[in-house]
Image 1: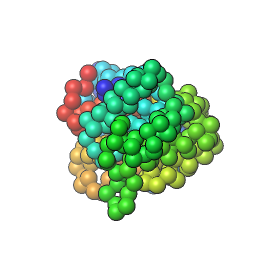
Image 2: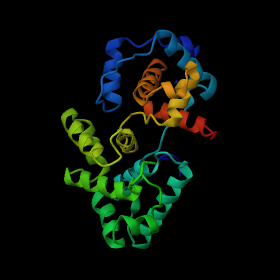
Image 3: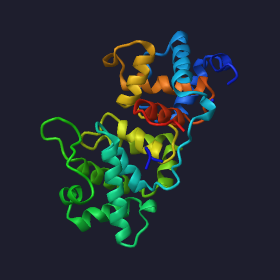
Length: 270
């Protein structure tokens, strides 16, 4: 299971993206609930383009994600479980969910929110769900932080309550700016989900192009630009990857996000 399972002279092949192009690319690629205050300079963008080619190879050969077997239930579980941990632990949770549902004679790869919520009901709530399918990881290191299973159940209920039952439903939400803001605000209102990282990621897993600006992305951007990692915030890192993808002609920014993630973990890129 994978994280969810671009030139002749590459550096000179694409001009720096104009401001209007940046605006349209960012609004197309990912939901935004902030205004970009600090934009990449032309030199920084060139540096990032060079870094991508040096470390990731020919952008045209980057591996596309295959999301065809990921229903919304698996997307939600993956997005919540993936923060602040090694991904192997997330894979284990996904495997256990798939096994649990297959034993019931169901197809876990098409499960939506009703089916996911049903597993919590059948097992007796987030505590037993964590023991049987999930793990004991919490949503943060803060005192009193809930189990990630609590957040999985809460987000599933949130989406269901807004009529978002399937992956296709979420993709339709992403195509409607007002609806996207509504559902995104509800997702981020769940305890320990206010940063929006899991919201960005669940959209990506559902097939909406975007960037999950976690520590892997922040490290890549910071190291490429010769900046201290602590000085790079998630919004800047996200915009940096989006602009770099556009400048290199990468059609789906998720492809670059995924390649960076694989590189940072020392995994094969293709």
